[in-house]
Amino acid sequence: MKLLLNPGRRFVIGVPYVWLLLFFVLPFLILLRISVTDMGNSVDPFAPLIDTSGDAWRLMLEFKNYISIFSDRVDGPTIYVEAYKTSLKYAALTTLLCLVIGYPFAYFLARCQPSIRPVLLMLVMLPFWTSFLLRIAAWKGILADQGVLNNLLLWLGVIREPMVMLYTDVSMLVGMTYVYLPFMILPLYANLVKMDMRLLEAAHDLGASGLRAFWLITVPLSKAGIIAGCMLVFIPAVGEFVIPSLLGGAENIMIGRVVWDEMFSSNNWPRASALSVVMIVVILVPLALYYRFKDAAGKSA
Amino acid sequence: MMRWFEKNTARFWLGSVFLFLYIPLFFLIVFSFNSTRQDGVFTGFSLRWYDALLTDSRLVEGFWLSLKVALFSATLSVLLGCLAAFVLVRYKRFSGRTLFYGLVNAPLVMPEVIIGLSLLLLMVASQRMFGFPERGFITLVVGHTLLGMAYATAVIQSRLLEADRSIEEAAMDLGCRPIQVFFLVTLPAIVPALVSSWLLTFTLSFDDVVLSEFLSGPGATTLPQVIFSYARRGVNPSIYAAATLFIAVVSLGIIAYGAYTLRQQKKTAIP
Image (cartoon, rainbow over all chains, first blue to last red):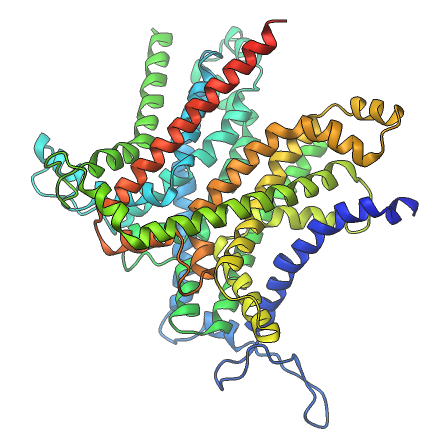
């Protein structure tokens, strides 16, 4: 009890705590509150939750915004459901591509001579320090119909006519993989570089081929790195906003963009809030599974 | 035979991925010197886009605003992150610790769109009730600090965990008060982490576009927002020129940092 009353300690805990409560928790509560208000009759979204004007107290909750996300039309899924699906699809494909490209990369990086490893690792992180937006803008110039890549391929005679790559799945996936690849490589590298090489030697001595040893030893041992990398790519990829705006076409609308449009184009704050709450739920599921896995791994270790 | 194969596969894979990572940077540098607006062909060397960049008032104003926001939010992020990291590492038991731990890390996994939207709603609510704050500089700093603090805490926390506590205990035994221990022993030990987290949060803020799109107001447009709107409209090589200047500054910074650490290593190696 004496420790709690210590003013220095109270200050050290209090300042960041109050900051987080004020600017993280409170905004989120407002978001939740606005997601259950009715915008239709131009009701103030900040109106109190409980209506005391009548004889009895009435709870002013409106779930219409949530219902309208899932069932607006009879003939098929709503644009919101489509946007969630598109987001999940691109996030999943990006995660897969990053894993397929990043795993061998991290593996070979971890097997390099120790003296050059820090330099190579530095080179992986270096593009990070220059504007993310500008690197995406560069891809726009590279992949355009009259862009560098098409001109190069035409000049080489590989293709006869320019390929359409910009504003399609190709440009979306190139951009997303490009941005998120380092997030996959770093945890995988950190995991693979710690591996005990004697296990592979033992497997070799017992007659396992290189590939077999890789599948039976290296991959299972790097499971924690794989899962961490996949989470670091998948979760931010679901909410991606900039890449679909610059590299995506009309059919590549992801949920981040839809939230933005509801907020600023349609001015429908309650629906934008409801869409965000659903998005959090969508992200929480894999996140919860991840923490469960991490806890289980921690206990068995 | 097998080793030869593996070695060359490794070379090929590492080389290809590095090429992939660096192609956009080469593209930006080369086409910033292009003489025409064309994006696919290099038609000749010129500096006209650098000229256009410096006379473009939107880009220049955006740059100064971004710089101000980044300076403030990086400094605030490091201060708050330092306190939060200290709490997480040193105060193992206080009521609400689990909640605190969750809150510190939550912005890292929360989509920026949601952070931006909910902060905007808070700012609007606060403005209705208190007439404050106007959307612009202050709201931008708050938003960027919220995200930056989470990163700063993670960096400082890992450094604090490595720090040798016995030196602090020795200082205590010699009669230092806790606050003296912090400023004389703990703080000097974590200075490298403070510097790197400041640079990281500065970069995050200077580069951020999503939070800014939600939190900036009329008349307060950050540099990434200007670049974003140019990039969406079509080809504008002045942003390539901006990118090239960025790359130059970052490369110089890294070379300077490398030289500095090398000198430090030599210094400590002599005695």
